[in-house]
Length: 128
Image 1 (spheres, rainbow, N blue to C red):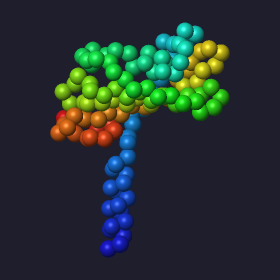
Image 2 (cartoon, helix red, strand yellow):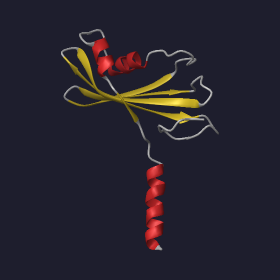
Image 3 (tube, rainbow, N blue to C red):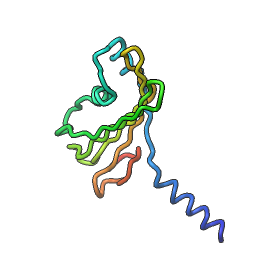
């Protein structure tokens, strides 16, 4: 019986974790290769996120921290999407700046569904 409760507890905790979908940074790296006009990590992630069709007003929360040797962890959260099922999107990016030029090392994304349309926490399951 104790084993059952232990397994249930582990399953419950793991189901609450955020899950992210990897995004290939190669196309974006090709787009920014050689550019020296991108001044900050915040500017870099906003350039990546761009402006998609039908996404309403572009209100972002962006946080960045340097982890050492010119490498930054950058997070962009866009809440209140003009979408019928997806409420918010989160982008996590790791990037390095050397000699005034950026290279993106990795990108991950997750989203939250609108109430009643699926997952209320960050994840990658489709919203209904």
